[in-house]
Image (cartoon, rainbow, N blue to C red; front, top):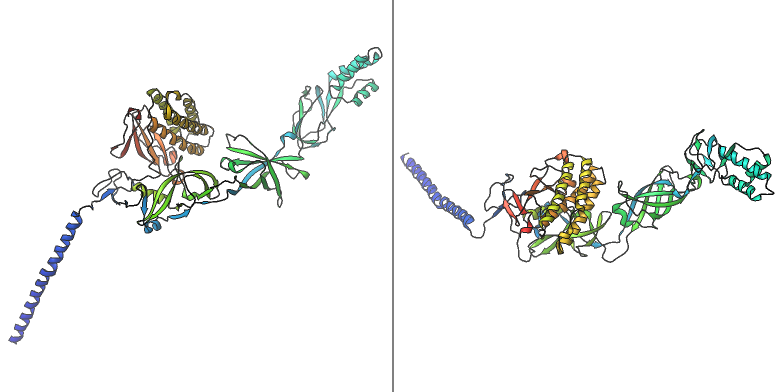
Length: 593
């Protein structure tokens, strides 16, 4: 029994000694290794990280923390610079492209043809409308045609007139007849006087045979057609030549189709059009465009395309609605490149795409500005900026653009710097008045007041006309000429419509040019602010210039008044960018270079 106790004691002591030895050997070395590894991660040279904000990519800090603007956690800024990659390109891994739903396609040539769907209306041929007037002065004694829409035949009696003047003329005829042998010229003159009132030779002979003056005379229809308007009532007094009826010949009619601005390049005189009329089911009509309006209606923003149609059986009645199609083609030319609409990011002035390139280090995208031609269904024709076969992003473009913003590279939000130009103070004072008038337009849209926006836009147009471009020379002169043209077009578009949403579309273009004017020449204002709303125009985003740092959104008005942020502050007399708190500062006084 005693031997067993000794054996148990020796075994327990051995176990304790083994555990202590294991702890010293393995636990201590592990701790040391972990400590060494931690020190290595902190102190390894060349691996210091830069931290940025996903919402404010201009923020750069050497250590993690909170964004000084919005308070969000900072994230590491990845170094994407590899050898052989354009420094302006943004790199994306295959995984990142899948997560961002980025797809690409090659720009290719296509025949510029598409089907246009047009709406129109049957109208009376203006050349076949005539005024049926009274050739006899007097009182309307009888109307044979009492309502509009009644058909009259040429030569038909349509009214009866009592005319004291004709009674007198008949008495003169009777007296002239008595001396016609001695004075035949006087007799012929008396007859001609009656004929001047559109009496026929037979009517004059009947008067002579009766020997009694007639008090009432019939008015005969000059043309055949349908009465579309009655101008007099029974008992009215009419003068010679006064209109009694308007008569239209409906044997031929016009069908006028609306052509919107974006479709005008596709439509030309001589194009064939096929159309249907809802009230004539089962029948398709064919016609040829015989005339295109040379001007656009300032209210509806459309031009009219005219189709002339024979109208046997009067199937086509004025004011009927028509729906037509045109197989439209543009003139054939080399290099008709097309890209999907989803590939294009539009900033109001610039159209941008992301061009893909592949290197040994992976896939890269670089932003490129393109000039677009007419829309072609779901595609755009590209006038310049791309080559046949170049691969571009057709979906996920905004994800690529967001990555470019985070990396501080050219993007839709970061415009190329505008070249500042020399301008005398007198010129800057004049364009400052333009900017102040622009602020009135902006504030009217903030308040959802379309009428005041129209008035302020008209005022801006008047001030623009007074800017003396003779104060500028060389490139500055040419640059202002182009800017002034765009500014004037935008203000005129705003003042031509009461539709506030249309006004906001044109205000976007006006703002882009006002911003360029501000950056190019400077304003005589201490501070103005470049502000941005990311949700405007279906999340495409839009900028505007404000006289206050308070965000009041002109693109949404009261619906989302505070949507937006200050992107840049332009200061008078500061020619360089300056970081000041949350704002990226830029000059408005480039003249002080």
